[in-house]
Length: 125
Length: 108
Image 1 (tube, helix red, strand yellow):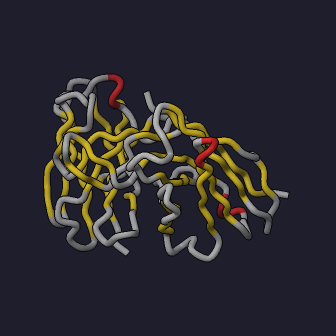
Image 2: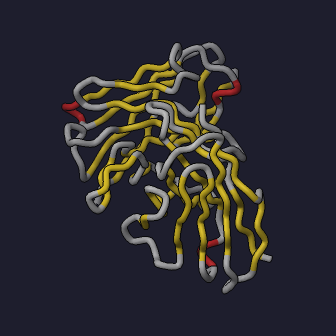
């Protein structure tokens, strides 16, 4: 059973850097899968932040392009998110997820099939 | 950026009734559309991928249809556990991936 678990500070100062880690169990970071970060502000729909592959390939949502960095730690089976210059607008629940680029019943599709439970991050002084 | 507009915002129904949720894309996404269910305090759960394919373990009462710009999620007979928020998601213009604003299915 594949499980993802987010970890990191729940409170970040304005203008600071948000740093989160996702630990994977039941799958390998070096499998064929891509891995993503998705966030959700209160009462809003999810927002895709970006994706990465264990080989170092990354794709970011243009809305975050100048502030975001994602990386992989193969030795720990983890991947991470760094979001700089945060403001109150970055307050949200942050999820790590497997995907997109998954294959379900032989169909290659761009969806998220496994999600972490999410971690609430508040930007405030 | 492709915008997904979901309607209605809220759907008030009773258990056993049929639910019909709509997702409209601002331009064609062919069949690159998925549906998720989200309950309070939980992560979204994949229901439907490629517009009409049920994800592993999803009951047959959930079905998806549509192509191009207009898509529908149908729940044939609502069970108590189906009252939740539903989101559509697309990734046609790679790499940008977007979600809709959601439809809340509440108990009438």
